[in-house]
Structures are given as structure tokens and as C-alpha cells.
Image 1 (cartoon, rainbow, N blue to C red):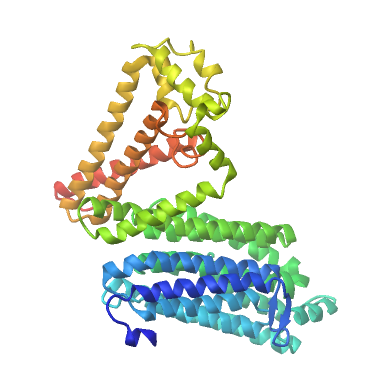
Image 2: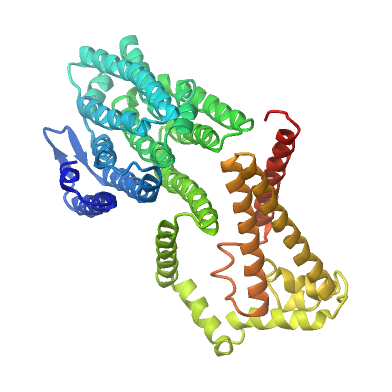
Length: 525
């Protein structure tokens, strides 16, 4: 924020500086793993658990800052305050991950929460941002009062706020008192709001919908991971002697959260609200691990939260890539798009270089005859399958090449299998079918744009691009100009999951077309 006062020209470099700071903190975090122990009179604990969650929130913050660079340029809102707020929030979340005392839990939670309240309303000229920030602040303050009240009760009962000491005192009692149970319930309510579990989830869809897209991605990943980190530490440490009392509460909330998140998502028409309810459902899944009250459950939750945080940010990133691709095709803002393409190419090269399996596939593709029974085997016999197919094919089920020369390669060589069994006429029909779908998807997108429906237009045309890329990749594999499994299959495939994804994409395009027709007839959608 101080550097912003002397900044000249574009302020994107402030975001780059934030990325450098987060990367340095990430490296320092792993260095701290070599010097584990307690600090500040046991108020902070550095152990493997804390290092894992600190690393997770830092990675989530790094990705969100990276996604924000072009977004803030497009919105004309580049500011040092934005990046400072993300960094403040990350500091609070790192404190939560290492907290060994209820006082530090409260301090970390407030540092993180206050910064995210402001981030939710950062675009002040957007009424949706202001509404999201107000709802988040009011409900968050209300939940914090429950948490602080629970902390006060447990301190009044035990005389300490250290998590390990609270556990020792409760273990000495033959049966924990009702006051201890009520304190645990109040703390559960306060933390339950932060991770959006039922019945404290009402804020999440509204805030996700109203906040800026990178902020929604950040709220869905980093604060939730940090809150779950302290959730597990408190209930698996301080309140472990009361497991028989709070486990039923956790089970009930987990069941309700999964039901509310999944059922409410079915009727959503806004993709950000849909992701909000998805976040609620995932919180229910993690809560099941807490209900198990075991070390295996904690390990499972750590793995699940890492996958969830990265994939949820990835969902926003995919939408951003598709949207920027469409804007580039329309001649809009090509510089961010070019930068994004460079990052994707670098990431793709690193993906190949760091994986011996993929590197071996690339080498085998460059010289397929060096290993005729390996990588080149599938590629060369895909062409043989084309040669045997003739115009009308050899008939379904009569294929020898598919059974013996194309083992486990049917998803990469879909067009080769069709050529062998249905002939070149069948291949032409399949490719023609995809061409019609792609052209129609772009037409539906243009129609939606003419009706001032910007987001549905981007979605429809993005799906058209996606289907076109899939078709081109499959054709390239079959013609021998693209490598086979190891590169194409993990990315785009016509296997079972690929067919399901394509059917969902077509259903979305048809829904957009249906809404366009209703608007043209004068109805509302």
C-alpha cells in the first residue's frame, strides 16, 4: 500500500510483488518443518499438521492473486489495497493453522475475517459487491460472538485457554459438566459459520454470487481450509474427552449440510451460486471425517481439503480461460490472453518434463519405431485400423484389429475404431455430427449475446470451442500427428467420464437455447 503511493503507470507489478512474497512465505513454511515445536508460551504450535495447512492456504492465495491480475485490469480496479487485504487474510489463516491457544484462534480468525469482509465488497461501484459484503459482515460478526462466548465459558470453567491444558483438565473430571458441553456447542456454532455448514450456511451462496470472481474463489478455498484446520485441532484436542457428547451433533450437521448443499444446487441458475452450494456440500463431506474422531479421519480430511481447494480454484480458472478465449476471438484485450497462453504453455512443458511417464511417451512418439511394441504400437495400428475399414467397414463385432491391436486404446482411437467397423462413411458422419453441434453452439452463443446475456453467450461459445478442440485432438491422434496416451487421454477423452461431461455440456447449451427462445417470445427466464 505504501509503494502504491509512488507507483507510476500500470499497477500490475503490485500483484507480482505479492506473488513473490507469498512464494517466499511458502518456502519459509517448509523450512520451519525442520524446527518444530511450540512458541510464544505454547500459544503457537509448529508441527507437520500446521505446516501442511499453512502451505495449502498460501498456495490458494498465490493462485487467487494470479487470477486477479488480469481481472482487476479489466475492471479498472488495480490497487495495492486489494493485494494487501489478501496478504492480511493469509496471515490470519496461517495463525489459525498454528494456533495452540483459544486466544490465538480468535486473533487469527478476526485478522482473516475482517480482510475478507472488505474483499467481498471491494468493487464499491457494484451493488452486488456491497450487498455481499454487508451480509457477510453482519452474519460473520454474529457468529464471532458465539465463538467468543464459548471461549469465555470454557475459560471460566477451566481457568486456561491453552488447548492441551483444557484437554488435561476435562480428562480429570469423571464426566465433563454441562457448561463444558455448552461451551463446545457455542464454539462449534462460531466455527460452523466460517466453514458454512448447515444450518449456518445461508451466507455462502449470496456472498459467492455478489463478490468478484477471484474473491469468490479465494473465499471458497483458503479461509475454509484454515477454519477446518483449527476446527479439527480444537475438537480433536481440547474437547476429545467429550467425544461421546459432540459426535452426534457433528453427524447431524454433516448429514444436513450434504443434503442442503446438493439439493439446493439442483435448482440454481447462477454458476457462482451453484459453486456456493457446492462449497456447502463439500463442507459436509469434511465434517464426516471430524465425526469419526480418529487420526485416519484427520488424514483423510487433510487430503480432501487440499484436493478441494485446488480444484475449486481450478474451476474458476477454467471459466476464466474460456471467457478470455472468446474475448480474444472477438478482438478484445489480447495482451492478458497472450500472457495466459504463455503461462499455460510453460505449465504444460513442466507437466511433461517433471513426469517420467509423459516424457517417455513424448520420446516414443518422436521415434515410434524405436519401441515397436510400446508407444508406436498403438499409433501405427490406429492407421492400420483405418486401412482395413474401407468405405462401409467390416461390421460391428467382427473387428480383429480392435481386439488385438488396440488394447485399452479405444478412447484415444475412437475414430479409428469407427473407421474399422463402420468405414470411412461412419467417420464422416461422426465428424459431420460434431461440426453441426459446434456451429450450432456458436450460433446459440451469438443469439444470447444479442439478447444482452453475456455470461450464457460465453458459456455456449466456450462449450463449442471445447468440443472442437476434443474433435481435433482425436483426429490428430488417429492421423498420427499427435502423441497417444499420456498426453491426450488425461486431458481430453471420449471414455465414460468424457461422454458424461459432453452430455452435460450439450444439456447446458440446450438450456441456453431454450432461454433464448423464451426471451424472443417475450417471456422471462
